[in-house]
Image (cartoon, rainbow, N blue to C red; front, side, top):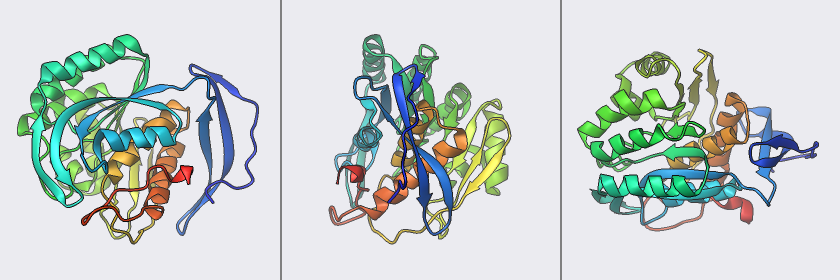
Length: 301
């Protein structure tokens, strides 16, 4: 069980109404520490936006983000940046959407709802990325987490070289969080030890960026947090023996956003997102003939 001996202290007022905190202990083979699980009173749910590509297999992209948001009891809206031809067996084709259509979608959503948070994933092209950067200027209230999706796990390029440049030089200086894996970190900041590359990426963004480097592809899947204040922490991981590993980065970044808008500390938000992914991996069931999806909605079972 993720939550043991739970109790509910008095509700805390917030921008979203009442947020309740349930405290307990999350345990796995590598750590045993106090964490907070958050859920929002049913009458008021914060609205969060995912800006990402569409994965028809629903293992990654906007549909995976929306499932993760729902699992954390926040309401998700979406802006699709690119269509893909893919399944659990890999990506066969990527088609970035018209950047003007993407921008109109973003503006129309923002005119209708107040966005508590924005998760940015696959952008597809430099032109789309530039429109998203410009849009963020109108959303100062939103917590923004970028999952810099550059290549699929099967090796397919998911953005053009101009898009990588926009992410590095224009997007990251405007946001608070980025969650690259080791390969993405190397593309954005160059090769080197994780701590040094993360610090280099942070400096490139102007110093106000929180960097979480995910190590899920390693034999020991440890994650590294370098906060904007300069504090660094390693989060030990647990290798789950499963073939359902498609979309772990999407789930992690979306869960991190949910923790941040609920008021968790940086360390607790990272730990909570990591635990969510571990639990979703453990609860996964076979889908398709390749690398299947996590079970994002395990809490409903």
